[in-house]
Amino acid sequence: MTFVFDPPRHPSVAVAGCGDRVPVRRIFCVGRNYAAHAREMGMDPDRDPPFFFTKPSDAVVDSGQTVAYPADTENFHYEAELVAVIGTGGRDIPQDKALAHVWGYAVGNDLTRRDLQLKAREQGRPWDWGKAFDRSAVIGPVCPVDRIGHPAKGYIRLSVNGSVKQDADLADLIWSVPEIISILSHSIELRPGDLIMTGTPEGVGPLVEGDVCRIEIEGLGAIETRIGPRH
Ligand code: MN
Image 1 (cartoon, rainbow, N blue to C red):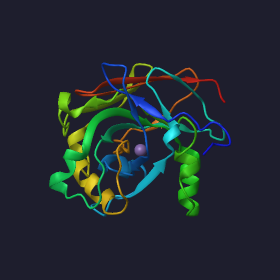
Image 2: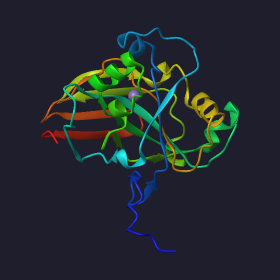
Image 3: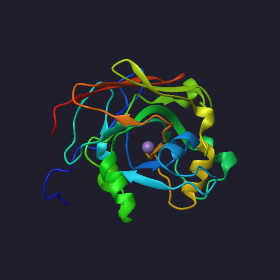
Image 4: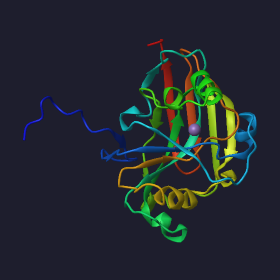
């Protein structure tokens, strides 16, 4: 068998402290998973089942890279998030077994074309153009579970040019990592290399050309992204 043209390079994210990379299969994102953020988006926080959207695997960007201000938006937003990296796949995973499927954790930035997302929401259209565009998922070096365990509390903090914009605690997640994994795996089969972006706390806001956006999660280190000229 011959490919008719060269297949694209497999998307991957860095592993902390070594040159290894995690191959990325799919990126699942949880919507509105902190009560205060749900309120700032004009929604009621509740315990309705979580909802998901996805990003393409090749949207991943390493920390330290410049991300060009994307096309078609006048309101480009940051979203600080804890990312869980699946190392062992499965279906119908019970909550009490879910953490055994996690290989590691990373800091992530769910970059969003907010104007396109809100317009899609109003019109009942898909979120893809607001969420799943090129270079929309900054994912920091992944810290393996065997080194850092499973962070369930600790600060998650985002600053733009040194000024703090988001400052919350992982303990405030409405749906915890084991709950999310269990619920997801009852709907789709999880596989190694799946990334789960677990949602952002309150304080989302815009980025403009020249901004440096830094996100830090207790125990996981920090990621940094510079916004470049409009694409
Ligand atoms: Mn998000």
